[in-house]
Length: 373
Image (cartoon, rainbow, N blue to C red; front, top):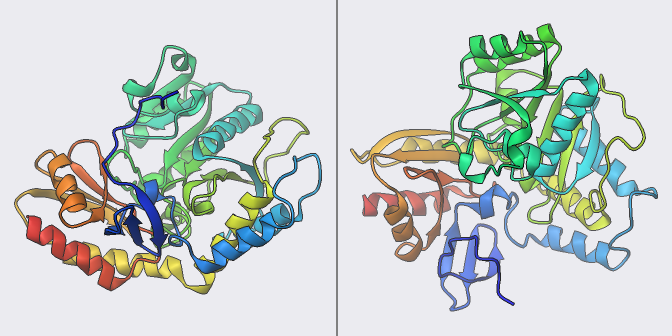
């Protein structure tokens, strides 16, 4: 049997990682400025993370959500305290797409309505509901297209209000910072307008912080730069540093009903141990502050070049848009300078480094990019 061939693969086989560094099977060292799609939040193979998972695996690895799991409550309390949402409740699942599916389902339960407002350039996942609110026709099958979705432009509050006036909108879903769309940051004024519109028309405001959350922007959640409090916040990726885990933070205005949501693997012992270790490391090593400091350093010292059209970003979520196809540039960074980066579309180099990235490591990238340009 062969693998189902859906990925375009670089000819690199990572076998070891530490912090922001990766080594391949030939011993070649690479600087990781992509963190496996923003998943590696506290660095590869952090000793505390390894110890937490190892100790838990020696006790019990899994049981279902039909029994009490004290680690789930411990995570809810820690996450609430660190994020500023200690009055919210936590629902645990396995991925960002699943979190967004559950958020939209909960919004529909809560309002009795069936339409979602989403935004052009968005990415919310590849499951049925999540892909329907993702602005990428290439990944929407006929089966996915049956959901009621209205797409608006970022910053167009008038279009959002027009959609809400139709009376059938359950929720509005927006990324704290658009990731796959090219690192576009909604303005504080627009986010505040969305919050007010949702309150006025009785819609649920869902903040997708799967990629932009967990300290990446220099605050715990990217939407906190706008001073708003959404009804539901979805997280995944960096929440457990590579162990599959996702979650929703749910406003106290929502009432749970037994059986309305469920998951087999969500909130399992190993995922909770990993997620608690991540919060320990983020807090003890001040990684939210580090993300802002090092991200600002990169933004301030990027080389000036006519090949660069625009730079966007906040913290360690940075998009460098070029006046050209960036695929050759990305290959040079990987195979000549040994630096992992990501892309968004054809023209944006996307940086999503682990939050422990140092100034010295950032300077390695800045020098490499300057040399290539």
